Image (cartoon, rainbow, N blue to C red; front, side, top):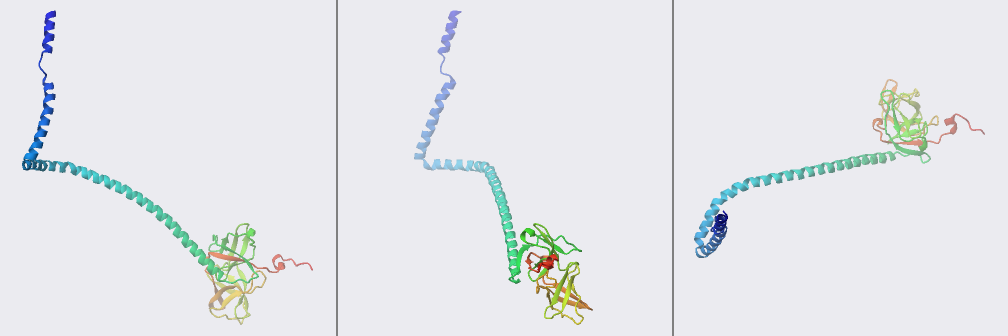
Length: 292
């Protein structure tokens, strides 16, 4: 049994080279031979090799075209997606920029309107002895039965009840309620507004009364007074509460014995006004006579 094992072991060692080893040695030599042959043939027979290369190119070109077409399409879709993403980002940026520009444009328009309103307001000359406060109209709490507006100026700014309020062209009302930071102005068209006035160019005095409409009427005129259309109505200063000679309106119609007067300013579009500090006699304000 021991000799057989040795015999078998010797037979295994003396077996010739395996097919795998032969293949590992043969194929590299074959590739080297084919490469050398290709170089020699290329140098010796350039035309046949060229024809073979062209034939191989013709055969492989459709394959490469078929393979590259979906790749190119996929690359095109990727570029399209990237472009859409860039366009969306650019569109968002432009929308935000347009919003900011619109805000600046609205601000510029508002400032231009305010500047124009203030310039127009300064066209009306006030007596140099009068002090005034320029402020804007911030709200209109009135309605069909109350014609008034609010201004953001109060007692801490020197505003007092009874002071005249002037618009771009003339008197628009007077202060009737005063708080620390805001005041209410009763407009000349309010039903409770009664202003001592003078028909300009004459010595005829009257009371200009509001009617809660767009026009006012002249009351308590002299019997011989017949103001013509377009005649200007100004404050008379009677009573000492309002400065004299402030324009209020013009006569627009006469029906029977009623004379209608339209305010010089558009009271529905008041932007800025001036509160006039008229230094009247203190006795007229307080009702008390100064002691001698």
